[in-house]
Length: 135
Length: 381
Image 1: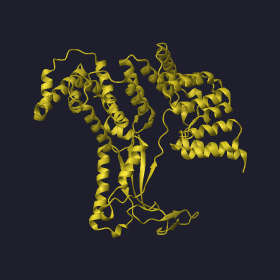
Image 2 (image 1 turned 180 degrees about the vertical axis):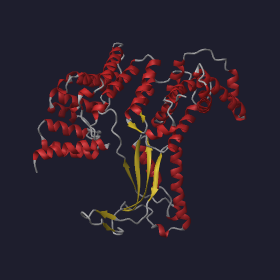
Image 3 (image 1 turned 90 degrees about the vertical axis):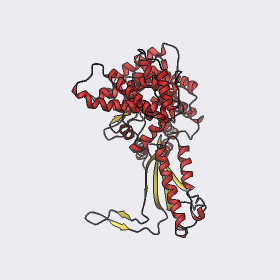
């Protein structure tokens, strides 16, 4: 059992196969896309593999300490940055193969024309507590 | 009202119901009802035979539920046909529960969850906390597992090795939430060892005790890992070590060697050495050879390379390592260690840093990063 982060990117990931920006989809296509992800999360909850999932706003800012007594520096919104995270889902599964299988399923969410978008999802294992037996 | 008493009794009550023919999910519901009833009634006076009381109430609840549900008539017939249960040893009932919860039809995580719930008597919330998942997720995992085993008729004893694997998985999970899973695994394995006479069950119990004995010394106060060689042996639990070794010796004497006994033998040789330098590495290599023969596991051969490095020097260790797949977990860390001992500091530092990037826990990653930093500081820029 291990936890994996499935990361959805607005940008920064390789281009999906069905690469049409979302604002060119029909409203029904957008709804179908959202519904697909909701159904996916519901299914994982029933199978006991769901941990957490959140969507992120597209806007954000970089923040940095700027020295004693000075306000932190902010930079952004980072419209020009390469990478933007749209949201994530955390799953708890028996194997890496299962995590990849689920990410593949999520990547099949429908997009423009009702066809799967084949988007790329980043799959990252969580660092866990060290096992009781290592030596 | 003693909650620990109820928790200890619940699995036995459940086991009786399952043996009498109740399906698993219905039996669990009935036991929960009986526990609620006990919490309500017992403060006025605990019954003389608490378990008997719970069995009676739970069985009545089960029959009520079976009767009231027309679609469950089949089960009612089953109940009618069932002869009045005679006295049976409580030990066999719990054993049956172990086999049911570790049934091969279940995925490892489901088997673990169901075992903790049904045999361990933990609440769903406690199990969810221990595995850091939402309670709803764990509840679903457990109810799916219950549905799966409901279809299973256990008329033959199950596979001990499956049960042992599940307990080993629990043990390896460590500690979080208000349940210490390693301690829970020791408790359950101890209970299993009391119900079944099997050298590998004893082997697993010995292994757990020997590892558990060293736990306090395995981490520094700041949470960082302390390698075996640097551990303060005064902090090892000598009582647990003595018990583990005694259990292991009795098991080995029966001459039915298995992987858990072999692993326990290695742990015992570490635990027995008064100082790290006095460790009997030659014998440890021999046990790793046995273990490799029993399991064929590449991870075992990796650990064997470490032992060879100690017994015959780092060059011999590196030669043993060269025969293994470099993609194995911890392969890079072992290579780094052996190169350091061989005096090749530049390679060691590079490999430690690489191993840190591949580490699977923050504690391991930080430890390996410190090793790389230590060597780099020694070498200068």
